Length: 201
Picture 1 (cartoon, one colour):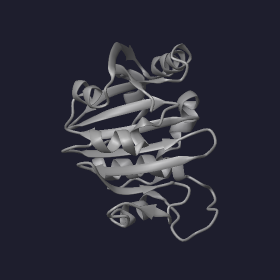
Picture 2 (cartoon, helix red, strand yellow):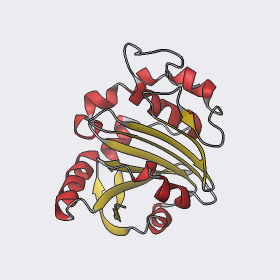
Picture 3 (cartoon, helix red, strand yellow):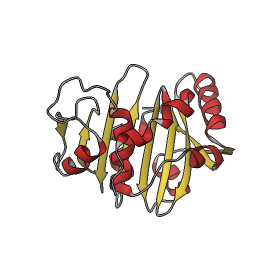
């Protein structure tokens, strides 16, 4: 059953520190070590819970003068979840597409300026990309492949200035629709994340 984006309103309420700016990526069948290698990352110490990840990400940003991004990874079923506080590597095509070789890559990004991206790649091919606030403007090799899921998760196709605008929440729901992986408060709070830093291009 496809969830509506409204089911993800807890994210902003419960995790305001990361909800301001984040990128969540799900990659099928690649363990964290392989994903780190594909992103040319450097392993770092694991961290318990998203609050520690957020603190470490901002500390890393200051330490590296914005040139390296901390990423936190966890295995969820057959997928690896990759979280970037204040990051966007997962929706950067020059990094995401090569890293998607032989697998599926679903990523969504939002920042404090209400800029966002949803990206779906398969084996280095960009299948779908769009700004969640502008769901009618889509590109990729199969831009209409997820239209049914987009409608069911709450994207307002063909409508201007929807009220309320739940496009960031709908991006979480659409990622779950595609992957079957639900992001939950317990997952964010209780997981010990494998961490790495990746050079920002």
